[in-house]
Image 1 (cartoon, helix red, strand yellow):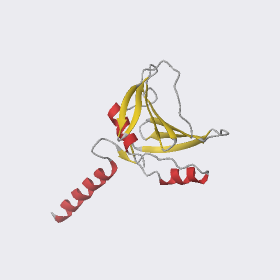
Image 2: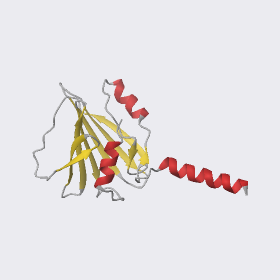
Image 3: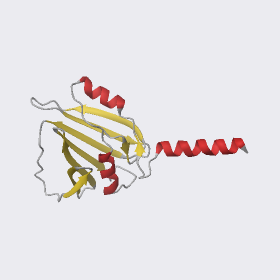
Image 4: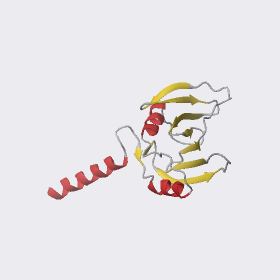
Length: 156
């Protein structure tokens, strides 16, 4: 009886440690942050994502006056989220996508869903522009606007 209880308790602890109450999965961003800091860039990164991460990829687009990095997050079930970060720049969008103002904690952001099927959330914080995009057509899992905002709120 005691062994069954301990096994059940360990199973619950394992499940709770992987997935938060909002359907987000904890993500340890320390190695990504260390890699970015080597190049003199220290953005905030998500500590929770709407899927379990299988792999990540960082790319840099060198610019003379600012730094542009993109991190691609690939999930265990084919999910794909891209995070672009631009330093020292306020980004303006000149497309025809209708953007909705949203609150990301205490920060003002913009949320949109475009016709090709991407969920987009962008905001500025500490002189860095963040542009997070979840590609619905490339992903097997649908996520909500709330999940995108909760992911953005997990940045630290």
